[in-house]
Amino acid sequence: MRRKLHRARGICAVLAAFAAGAFCYLLWRAPVFSGGEGYEFSAGASSSAGIVRADDPVLYKLFTPVAGESARYAGNRYEALREAFSARLLFTEEACGVVNYYLYSPRLGGGVMLGGYLVNLHIAVSAEQTAVGTPLIFGGS
Image 1: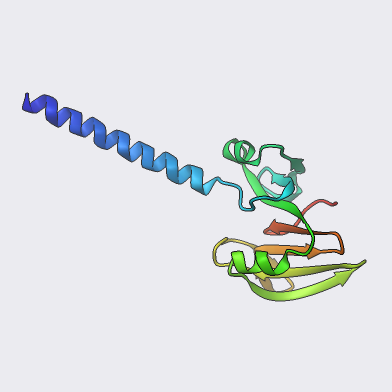
Image 2 (image 1 turned 90 degrees about the vertical axis):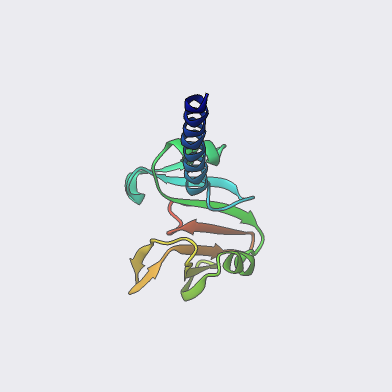
């Protein structure tokens, strides 16, 4: 009887460890941005591998390696996004009516060197919408 009880406890411990590992993997692979439209991924191991639009970003990111991701929002969402990621503004650029904010967020990790700074959050604001990407916004529109 004791052997069966020990064996059952061992099996439960292994199943609990597996469940905890699966939960951590799902959290790690979850899309970075929520509520955005036009979710895009830089597919593959590098940002130059190609841009893929995903109707279901959760499933896409769960099973596909990505180098970056981006989403679009209506209106100006710069302040809300900066605060949500506790990001520090590094520098800005403006071209063709779009203000590009390059930031670093300790919540995201990683990044790319750009202009001598480690950038891992890029927010572009136009009169109509806000695009946000990590580490940068790749692709267009």
